[in-house]
Length: 261
Image (tube, rainbow, N blue to C red):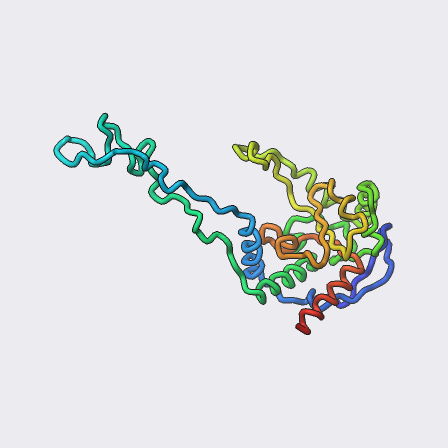
């Protein structure tokens, strides 16, 4: 059973009050809908690709027919095979075409359900721990902090606050996970593989985006920019999430507006 109230912590990791959680944190867990929504978001990053329609066909090769003791693939006057799929310089049998529909779509109601379900999953300690996050030192999940957290402008100040809140152990896990990818991917803009760290949700940017951009694995997002992929990277729900008090209040208002609409 999801609790109604959670504690709010200051930058020193001490209790600074309590806040009521909105009903969105009691949304049923729907991993199937979350996965559909994440795949739909990921598909928008794909770029259509295709082949030149005449690739492999710019040749005068024709089949010689039967009676030559050779296969009937198209050949040049020299006897070399051309044009056909499976021969050197020949066309592809089923080339990619730009007309292919690569973008996945999802109904608005399912998209909203996926977002709400991912938010609710991020508030379950067992799900966050099962996803691989280090949560033993975190006093409460969901972790809610005071609004001063949004005004942190330097990485060392953010690091100190995360240490006090017990979140830094998860970032150390991310740092230890960094590895150089094997294979050609090293040459293609994805040299390193890094685990996913905590997500910080704020109501506005007072400097926190700049402070967190150089800390491995950490993402910062405004409430209005939340999506299922941020809360469930790789379609795996239960990301460790740090909320500010004002972001919880803004989330309540956003839910109310959607219900009225």
